Length: 156
Image 1: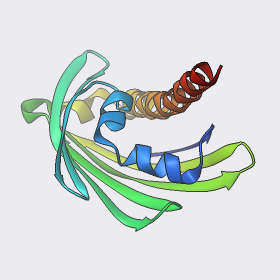
Image 2: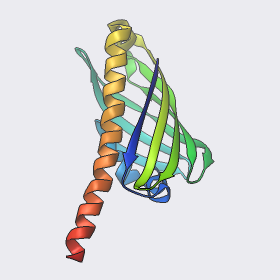
Image 3: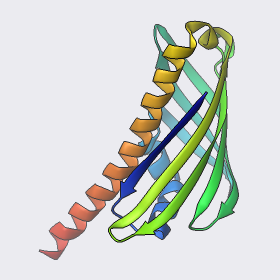
């Protein structure tokens, strides 16, 4: 299944780039993220708990950064195994474009799910995947909005 979207962020492409690569920011933004461990400059191990309809799953997996053109674009690959509940894997192409008020972020995600999770139906899976994508990017927008508010409070 494919998911696309775009967001405006009140930060420069360089700051958005840094945030996307920051373990603490990622853990805060990924819905249900319990932990992130950096394995290398381009790879993370994550534990994420999610719910798809009546099925809850804890997925343990890897996130890999590739095809990076700082601070313009990158490709994220993720895979998670939930044991008997199933698995999820996919990739996200993220592009960043400087605009007068910050950065225009565009994303294209391709997700595949298997096991018991896949038996729940394409419509339910697509809705959950879209919802989690929206939560992630909304959390990223909120991160920058909070940073701006904190900076403005200090400057007053």
